[in-house]
Image (tube, rainbow, N blue to C red; front, side, top):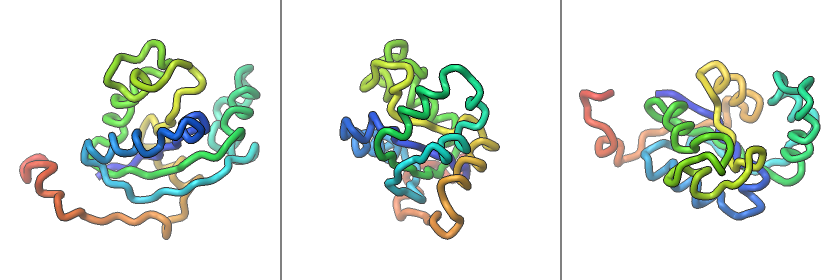
Length: 153
């Protein structure tokens, strides 16, 4: 099982798309193991986006991510990092194909609705930024045998 951090960004929260987008991940069969509503502070933004702090676009990124609440969540499932990123589509919603989350709901590069970890190391680091270990609750849903064949696990 793999985990990924998902941030439903301010534009997603303001547009009231969190439930619609979360349901797409759940419909895919991924487990929701942690979730909370929070306000990202400038300090937290600098920690999360540490690799971008010195880049020219960072001030507008920080202004955007701190402008309104976000919903942070941890999803769990097989190949969840890759699959979630495929489900999101390209960063710019104008370039994202229909059927992807950004293709269906997005029309901006910066306001791209959802952040998802880009690899296992990033997922581990990001999850630890937003959640304590006791806030993550893995469990096996009763429908698990209907999501993946036994020989695929």
